[in-house]
Image (cartoon, rainbow, N blue to C red; front, side):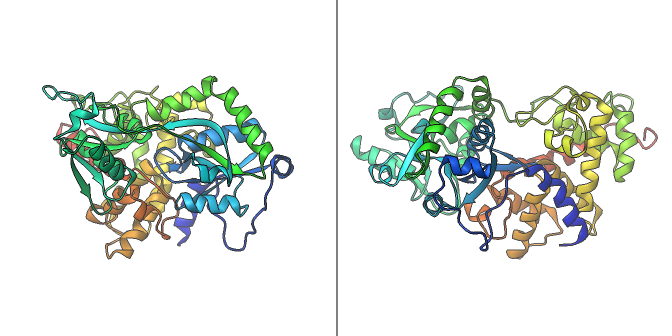
Amino acid sequence: MNAYKLGILLLGLILLGSCRQPPGPKEEALGGDDLPQIREKGLLTAVTLYGSTSYFLYRMEPMGYEYERIRNFATANELKLEVKVADNLSRMLEMLAAGEADVVAYPVVFTRELKRQVLYCGRPDSAMQVLVQPLRSGMPRIKDVTEMIGKDIYVTAETPFHQRLGNLNDELGGGLRIHAVEGNTTSEDLIEQVAAGKIPYTVTDDRTARLNKTYYRNLDVGLQVSFLQRSSWVVRTKSPQLAEAINAWANRYEGESSYQLISKRYFELNKRALELSVPEIKHGNISPYDSLFRKYAETLGWDWRLLASLAYQESHFRNTETSWAGAQGLMGIMPGTAETLKIAPHELMDPEVNIRAGVEVLRRFGQGFGEVADSAERVKLTLASYNAGIGHVYDAQRLALKYGKNPAIWDDNVAEYVRLKHEPTFYNDSLCRFGYLRGKETFNYVREILGRYEYYRRGGATERSR
C-alpha cells in the first residue's frame, strides 16, 4: 500500500474507535471470563456477523442494530467494546466457547440443544418469516397464506425461506409456485426485484423485510408465513453474572428513548434520498451556496457544479438536514468525521464550515487514489468513497483485480464489486477488510451525482458564471 493509501485509511480507521477487526493468530484466547473479570480488564468482547441489521461500516463508522445495542450495554457498564466478526453462526459459537468473545451479539434462535451449551440473555426477539409483496393500484394484497396458492414466489435456493415454503406447500395441499433462485442472489436482491416489479413475491425474515421497506415504500411485509421463533444474544454457561447484567440492562433499556431511537433508525426511518425534482437553473445559479461551491471546488480542481451536485445528493441544499445515519448539513458530514476534523457538532450547521469539511474529506480521499492516472476515474472512486467509506472501495479494487478487472476503472470494473459487496461470497472474501456494504446504494450515488452534474452543465451554468 502506498503512502497516500496508508494515510487516507487512517482518516477512516480513526473513526472506528475501539471497534477492531478480528485478531491475528498470535492473539491468545481470553478464557471463560465472567463479568468481574471483564470489569477488571475494562473490555467487553462481542462477536457478531456482518449484515444490514447486525453490523457494518458506513462511511468508516460502525453501525447496525445489534452493534448499537451491545455498544450501549458496554457504555452503561463503563466498558470498552471490541467487536469481532465471524463468517457464520457456527463460527460465532466456536469463538464464544473458546473464550475469544464474551457475548454473541446476534439473534441466536432458541433450541433445546443450544440451551445446554449457552445462556440466552437480553431482550428476546420473536423472529418470523413474512411474505414481501408489492403495493400497487389494482393489485389485491394477499391477506392470508391460503391466498398464496397459485402465486409465483421466488426465494434463494437452499435457505430457510425455501425450506419453509416447501413445508407450507405441504400444509396447504400444494399449489404454491415456488421458484428457487440459484447463485449468489440474496434476500435483499429479491426484495428489490419485488419493489421494481420484476418478480411478484418473495419470502424473508421480518427484520430484513422491515429494514428494506425503509428503502422501498411500495412494499407490504405484514403477512406472517411461519411460526414465531424466539432468539436472543448468548453467553457461555460459565458467565452467569454477565447474562444477569445483560438481562437487567435489557429490562431497563427496552423502555428508554435511546432504544426506541435505535429501533426507529433501522426499521422505520426512510433511507431513500428525497424524491424531489432538481431545481431549475436560473441565470447560471444552482443553489444559494454557489459562491461557496466555487470557492472550495478550486481546492479539489473540480468544476464547482460537480461539488454542487454532490451537495444536492446529500441534502437537497437543506443546510439543517440530518440523514437516518446521522450525516449532517449540506455535505452530509458524519459525527465521527467532524470529530476527526476538530469541528464541533453545532458548527456543522454553518454552510461554509460544512462545505469546507466535505471538501477536505474529498481531497484526502482523492489522494488515496493517487495511482489512478485518469482524473475522471479518480473522481468516480472519490465519490464512491465519500458515500461508502474508502475502505469499501479499496476492498472492491482488490476484488476487481482478483477477478480480472481493472482496479483503476470505475464503470463495469470497481463499480461491479462495490455493488456485489452485499453478498456473503464477496464481503466474507479474505481480501475484504471492511465487510458488508449495501453497494447498490453507492453504485447509484455515483451515477446520480454525475448525471445531475451533466444536467447542470447543460442547464445554463456557463463558463462565464464560473
